[in-house]
Amino acid sequence: MTIASAALLLFLILDPLGNIPVFLSLLRGLPLRRQRIVLARELLIALGVLMAFLWCGKYALELMHLRQESVSIAGGIVLFLIGIRMIFPPPEGLMGEIPDGEPFIVPMAIPLVAGPSGMAAVILMGSNDPARLGDWSLALAIAWAATAVILFSATYLYKWLGMRVLTALERLMGMLLVAISVQMLMDGIASFLAH
Image 1: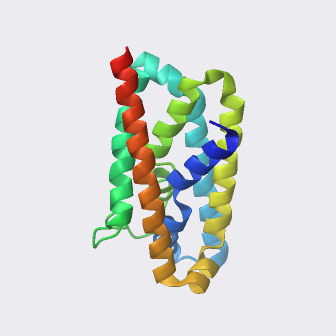
Image 2: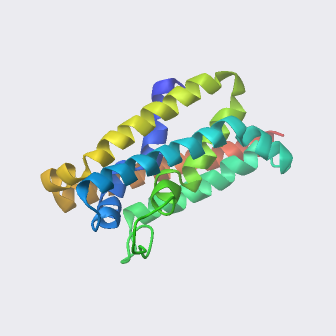
């Protein structure tokens, strides 16, 4: 996997376009300046969490005596469920009910940006090829930066593209995530059967 393909995979998993309506509704009651501060804080927390999983995930797997195949299969299942929810969202939205007040860590940083599928993906990248942790960190930084640009432009994108286009883009990203999740699942099963 190249840095570009890893960055694209992580970008799809981070799903910034699908998160625009949720982020706008979460930040709606705050002044514009405070919205930007909260958004920057949540994005930095998400980046820190994902970097921690990338660099320390292998050790966590060893500590819990989990094989990479288990994480690949579990990550594929979680990613599949998220992709299905993106294609066929429930009436209350992708993440369910949204609490009132200023968000802190939940739900913006975790699970909207740094969700279970993102954590599983970076753990797999780091544990499958630990010699390339620098490359994976760069790929994660690129995906995170693209996500940050889109989320900081959320208000303009929402006005410019409209809800229908954003919904169509989210469903398209959901279809791509379903395909990626099936590949992760098949790779995990194939690796398990090979051992």
